[in-house]
Amino acid sequence: MQEREAPTPSDVQPLDPHRLLDQGIARLLTELQAGQFERLEQYLTFVSRFHLYSAYNQLLILEQCPEATQVAGYRTWQKLGYPVRRGEKGIRILAPQPYKRANAETGAEEEAIAFKLASVFDASQLANLAEKPLPRFFTPLADDQPALYQRLLAVVRAEGITVSDERLARAQGTSAGGRIALREGLDSRNALLTLLHEYTHELLHWGAARNEISHPVRECHAEAVAFVVAYHFGVANPYSAAYLHHWGTTPKALVAELETVRRTAASIIRRVEQPAETDAGWDGQSVFVAPARADALHPVRGQPAE
Image 1: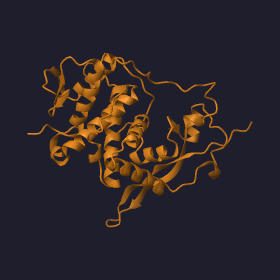
Image 2: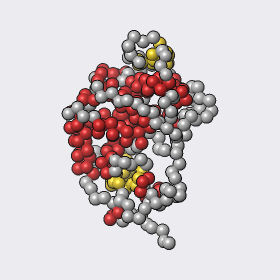
Image 3: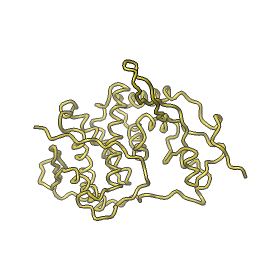
């Protein structure tokens, strides 16, 4: 049988990506402003599976195929040995297209990026999953998480951040710009979730940026990142909705917040899944093994406030 070529235009769903994005963002914003958080939690769950895609592409995939779990281009699936089922419709995303242009003022050649529509397909659209199941790169964990907590602890300490167990009055944990304190006696699951929350504060909320971001928005960041990373590793994490109505009040501001969460979660997931030999406490073996992926942008931790 002759191998099928790449999908024809009839194989993809015709859409206006900008209109679809506007609709998805508007619905999310309207629900947040009305105190309804189900769509945001659905989106954050989605981020845990697609953390290396931009917030815009995550929203595009979510709007077209909310049940998606793993996506790739037609030819990428072919190279991996998974043909797409005949007749399946592609999920449209925006793909970067680098090009060179002359600077309007100086005439010097410079690099620029345009975006064009591209099609990807979800794993559920593959033809041979029954005969060739997709490999699993990590297994959902039980309720106790000592191995994952120890791995995250090594990642945090490799950043030069100290972590200690202390007698805290009310909080489960605190972040003090280079120092994290966790309440004494936490079980490994709660210690993991608290450390994720405080580590996010360390990555995003110290230095000059601290005074530019309100306390409710800082808590939104920390809650959302901890939710995404924990869910990625199969750890249940009750999401606090107490601060969510403080998220972006305009579509542009909301997308900026979602992108901050995505980049930070992607960075932490990458570090946990692909430890470097220089990480403090690394024993020479990865606790969690992930497939080869493009590196995510790693946020730079600000210096402690004076």
